[in-house]
Image (cartoon, rainbow, N blue to C red):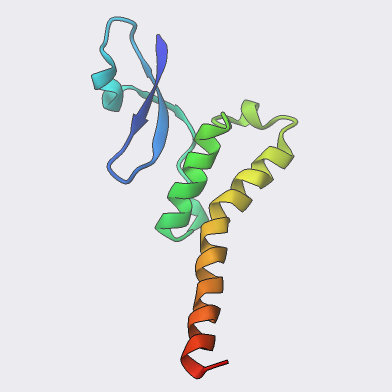
Length: 101
């Protein structure tokens, strides 16, 4: 078995396990190796996908991967939320411009 990266229709990057003889194009049918589904966190979809991809890119795929890497897990969450902070700040800027302050 070998690991390949598969990107689903929503843009989540997954590690998948494929038999050695299968081509990479079959990654969607492979065995998911992580990260785990995050839907039980009830995050907005955009944030959930961003967090999922941060975990993937940092190699935080399983419980074992998290051992001793709490700060990296926190950094993944902060990176996923950074987009929302920027969007929130833009709301303030647009409101200030609209009222002329």
